[in-house]
Length: 88
Image 1 (tube, helix red, strand yellow):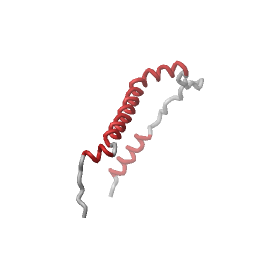
Image 2 (image 1 turned 45 degrees about the vertical axis):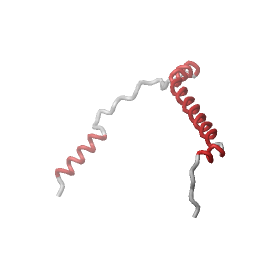
Image 3 (image 1 turned 90 degrees about the vertical axis):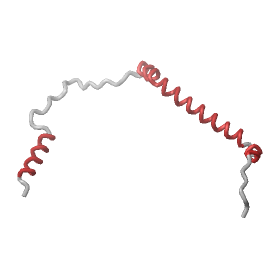
Image 4 (image 1 turned 30 degrees about the horizontal axis):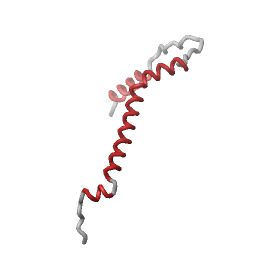
């Protein structure tokens, strides 16, 4: 069985240092671009609001009145209370 020997010379010979520095630089630049995009997002949103105004939803009528009867949650609560009271 061959013994595995680690040496920094093998890394240098294989351009490992240059490759790792290049990779770290690419990741750093990408993270900086993401950070700048997030920081500029509120300004971009206000700019886009000027260009494309937000949609206004008007149907020309008033909102329908709220139902005057019991709401669904009250009906469910009453049914559960009835079943709990009359369980055998």
